[in-house]
Length: 220
Ligand code: ADP
Ligand code: 5GP
Image (cartoon, rainbow, N blue to C red; front, side):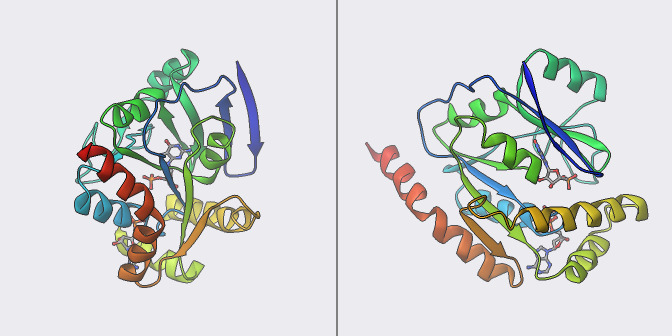
C-alpha cells in the first residue's frame, strides 16, 4: 500500500503507509537541508568523533557514485529497476525522486544501525522528512542550511561533483527546500552552516542528551 506524497516541478515522492516496526534503542537523527549545505561534512565529523555512538543509515540511490564514494558505505548504488523492485516488495521506509535520481531509506538500513544500539543518522531530503513524519521512527529533525543561495552555489561548484545541468537542478531544489523548511515545527533545529566549527558545535549540543544516554546504556 502506498500513499502519494506532495509534488512539485523538481520532485515527486511516495511513502509506505504501513507502520515501520521500530526497535527499542536511542532516538534516530535526521539531517536534511539543501544539497551542498554541508550535511555530509558535518556527519563525517560526527561519525569520526563518536564512532561507536552513531551509525549511518546507508541509503539506496540510482545516481552514479562520485570519486571516493564506496558502495555499501556511502550509498547502495543500484539501478532504477533494482530499486523499484525492492520498493514494490515493501522494503523501503521512504523514497523520493531528487534531481533526476531515486533515493530511499530501506528498513534494513535503519535496522542494521539500531541492531548495534547506535544512534541512527539519516541524511535525507525534505520529501524524506515529510514521509518519515508519517512513520513511527520519531527522530530528531535537523535542517542544515547555507548562509545564502550564492554561497551554496559556490560550495557546489567548488565541490566539483556536478555537471552544469545537475548543479542547476540542485539549486532549484535548494530554493524549494529553503522555502518549505520555514514550515513551523517541521524541524527541531535549523543550523546555518556558515562557520563549520560553530555549526558542528550546535549539532553536538542538540545531540548531547542522546549521546550521554547511549554512553550510559553501554556501561550498564
Ligand atoms: P551536502 O552533504 O549537504 O551536500 P557537503 O558536506 O558535501 O554538502 O558540503 C558541500 C561543500 O561545501 C563541500 O565541498 C564541503 O567541503 C564544503 N563546506 C561544507 N561546510 C562548509 C563551511 N562551513 N564553509 C565552507 N565550505 C563548507
Ligand atoms: P547527493 O546526491 O548529494 O548524495 O544527495 C542528494 C539529496 O538526496 C540530498 O538532499 C540527500 O539528503 C538526499 N538523500 C540521500 N539519501 C536519501 C534517502 O534515502 N531518502 C531521501 N528522501 N533523500 C535522500
